[in-house]
Each structure stands twice: as C-alpha cells, then as structure tokens.
Length: 275
Image 1 (cartoon, rainbow, N blue to C red):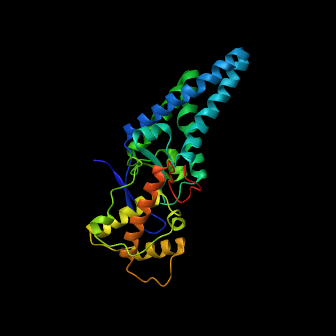
Image 2 (spheres, helix red, strand yellow; image 1 turned 45 degrees about the horizontal axis):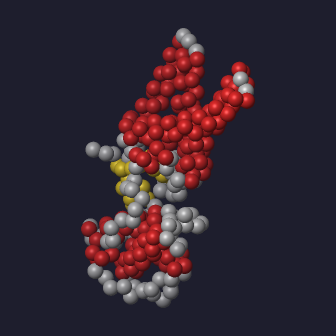
Image 3 (cartoon, rainbow, N blue to C red; image 1 turned 90 degrees about the horizontal axis):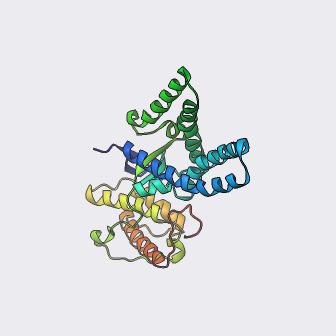
C-alpha cells in the first residue's frame, strides 16, 4: 500500500497526498537523466569542434554542472514542481508545510543532489582505495534514505522542506456540484473567476467531497470567507458556506473549461497569465 501524508493548506483544509514510491522516483530521475544527455549532446559536439584536451574537459565539467542543477531547478520552477521525468511518472514536488513551492526550496533540494549523488559518485569513480569505497557507500546510503524516511524524503527534501507526491493527470475533476443538486442563484463575473486556477479548484473539490461524503463542514466557513474577500463578493451575502462554495465551484469549473477550449491554462492563482 502507498504511504500517505496529510498536509494543511493556507485555508487550514486537510488534504491527503499519496507519497511517491521509491521505484517511481528512480524512474523519473532516469528519464530526466536521459533528457539531460540529449540536451548536452549538441553543446558537447560544438565544444569538441572548437576546443580539445584540457580545455574541452574543463568546459565539459562546467556544462555538466550547469545542466545537472539548472535543468531540475528551472523545470520544477516553471512546471509547478514537475520535471519532464516527474510528469511522465505522475509525480510532483510540493512544500511539506502546505504552502506554495518557493524558489528557495527548489534551489536547495536540487543543489543538495550534488552532495548526495554526483560528487561522491564521480569522486569514487575517478579515485581508488578506501576513500573511493567510502564515497560509494555514501552514495548508496543517501539513495536509500527515502526508503527509511516516514515521508519518503531524501536528504535534499529534508533540507528544503519539500515532498515528492503522486498527482492525478492535469485535468479538471468530476463535477461534484451536480451531485449536491443545488440550483445556481449567484452570478460570478469573469474577473472574479479568473482569480483562481486549476490547483485551487482541486482543493475546493476535495473540500466539497469531504463535506458531502462524510457530512463534515469543518473549514467551510473559513474558506468561503477568504474566497469572498479575495474576489470582492458582496459582504451582505450571508448564505450558508456550502451553498456559496458549491456555486462558486460550478462557475469556476465552467470558466476554466471554457478557457481550456481556447488553449489558455491557469494552473494556480500564483500564475499571472494563462498559458
């Protein structure tokens, strides 16, 4: 069975995430490694044509370091915590505290990989004797850390405060508003519906599912209040939070589906413009 972890959003809504399994993380890393090799192939061929000997080796080391670190960093920053390999395996990096994935977290977890993987492995391969054996053992031990961590974190995740979790394919979730059988009485403007993106819609879907299936309304009032304030909703509207959130969800989902038809995708409220 998969291990799960419960994370609380900024609205204090508990969400259960499935942690990425070790084989999935290894597979994603291998795919990203192949992608890096393909990206490095062109520059290395060009470099071989204009330099040779020690200069080629030195520049090759620099190119390799830049590619290893900035490939993962830029991909996770631009891909909402996903590299090409992670996306293929259905994985994503998120903040362990439930907040947004900050650039500092992404830099920290990826730079730490140098000490976990590349430096000891390359040093062990180029050296000999006891030191090479110790460096290789360090590489193996660092790679096995996620197996023994309760949250599946590697050393870089522990330092950065991140988790690698399983995520569904990036599509809108089934419409739970219809199952609640509430007739829409509110009309939201396009500007109000453009405040949030797909990520927030997933969170709201989880909240409504929990309220419907387990007959729990914990956190509904807080979430409804924050959304009303965020979109500038009429403060005189004192309707039940469940009614308001359900209608907002239905309108938000329809709005995002319409934008997707025109090729515009808004992943979250932190994204300035649809892509």
